[in-house]
Image 1: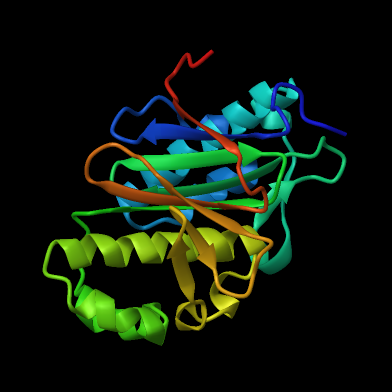
Image 2: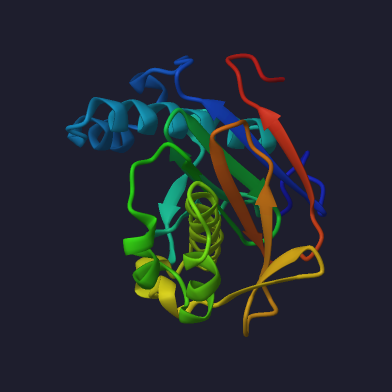
Length: 226
């Protein structure tokens, strides 16, 4: 079955500003509410509630179902997916700082973002997070260019492994990224295509999909988005 309202060539990426709270735990399933209560960090709990409620709202709109009627289950390596009884629709979620992304389409996909203000020593992390072929150029970059490029490479990799469902089963340093013809790609995997997203200031984000040239539509999610 196909999801209504989602064109074959489109990938919709919804932007959710987490500092504009509009959802509450009662908009989640009982299992999701229990998961939210297990978060010790208040910000992490808030991010989960807002993002999961937003995901249910977007999926419900696309599928023509009440948000709480959306069946979600875990697939390969724990990647969330729709229940098999529902129309075919792929989705992926990421959040960092005060922003969350929800990507939806009718092709396998993954999305990731990072806040540029995230405190990290990118020079120390680079050997474990980047392919050896990428290190010489990255190390020659001054701050903040190197910091931004490191996070760009990180989000490209994360979007890719989230899309494939491999997650932490694959070492980031084993994935070699290439850039050419104004596009990023994964060396040795022609089936996946990478896209750098243009996001609000202060954020770096990337999308991975099995579709070569999707129409990526960025949308802002509010309490009354349609």
